[in-house]
Length: 328
Ligand code: NAD
View (cartoon, rainbow, N blue to C red):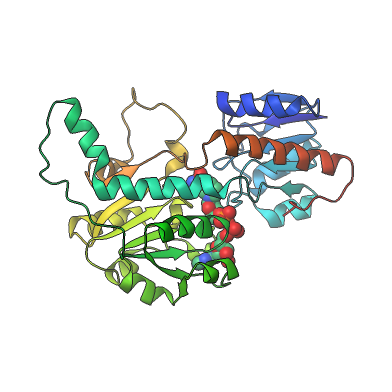
């Protein structure tokens, strides 16, 4: 059994190799993305393993099919980058890792909130230059403030659990309310109410064609002045260009982005020696109240172990013709 594994970094290889000691698959690692141009490199493989920014479009799937690939294994939960209808037509099984460590992502989201709120990123820069001025570093108590959680699945509920510990009021929006969220005391409201009443809004829903740019100029206008928004879900849930205007007129008081709609050309690589041509990223990252992290919310040793275990188990179950609960 041979797997062509795309978009791999040293940490992916380390954890996959460790878990593969149990399976003994042949793993061929590529550091580049799966795209229509690179799909031919899967030749000789039985399964292809991809991550969030790899291309699972019809064009790529057709190429994989012509190479005899029967399984596409996602090393992530989100599957917005894969054309599932095309995969079904072509007879390619798509498997994912639905839950590897919701706490990893939730903890990162809350870390971004705390960093932005208490200006820790600015204090870090200042104190390195022996600037101990506190001007401009005023935050607010999370205690008694209101958090609006959009998407109350595994990660949303994990985030709520932490925010509840701060003593925050929790508003929630999800077409399918969660008993766990209700147990934590979350109050389900419509989106407009969540926008109007939340001090901090955190996105934890998947990206679908229906919620592309869910947070846009219209929704920003409905929010409290100075609202904090954190997106650790998928970049295109938030209209980044509209966010620039909302930051300029101080509607958005702080913006945390672990994901970004144009991240595919930037993230996971060291671009520090390049001229970054993405003007939207440039403008956002020049704001002191915007914090970017490069899609790293999942990046804990616990999550990497769990991702590797589930990915290889998924592939093994399909190869043996066993039922696999993680087929999409
Ligand atoms: P989940 O499936 O457990 O929960 C998603 C929830 O979102 C569900 O309850 C669903 O009903 C709800 N939902 C769907 N459409 C919605 C909408 N339009 N508005 C509000 N709610 C909606 O998923 P999860 O494990 O909690 O993951 C959530 C998302 O987090 C993933 O889809 C992925 O995009 C993102 N994610 C990011 C990272 C990262 O490293 N930054 C890592 C893992 C997952």
